Length: 279
Image 1: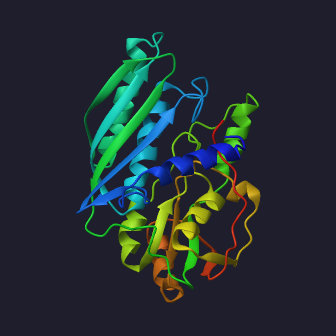
Image 2 (image 1 turned 60 degrees about the vertical axis):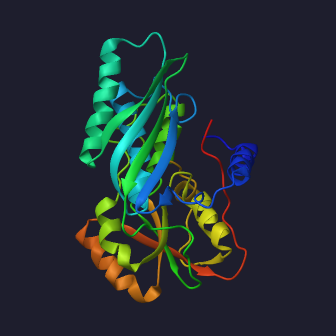
């Protein structure tokens, strides 16, 4: 959650060192089954004094289900690995597991197994197995496509900074429980050319999308750093043909999804300023 360019380089280096054609999207697509996995680690993604066990369990599950939603997939099963500090009580463990199970069930997903170990910090790693007949990929960008994001970005960064200052934030903060756009993505899928969820910030994730397709952008709507560098939003970054903008806007209104078009895909090497969001 502070700037650390070496961390970004090492993460990308590791990913690029793996030899598989299935790597590159929010989930690996094999037939109509999608596999995704994300970590939610204490002192990397959260501090325990910031969140109760129910909030930790819910966010850990939401950030993982977000990968399936981002690819127009329906979560089916989850495998959960948890490292448990010795000071956790049975009541706290119950709150954690009940929250994860309840959140998974909201999206039709069942926790079917995993692993537990003892450790000095609370770490969670979750694998989601989902299904899709029409997955939304990152690699299908076209020159001239519009770049847009859902929701209102910036609250996660603002509330994270407040937590670092020792302040309290609202119990319904997006930092605690991001909003996933499953209905919007499902209804607009036929018009979308590419997409991904916004976990590392709009600027960083737009760069990823442009990098993998070897395009740049032309700015249409200037975005300030409070919006562009706000990580862990888990809203959607989407692209679509300009001719389909009206249809996308209708679906956004029907699903009560705020939508902002901010750039157009172009043949250049323009990139946004990017900062890491881990501390």
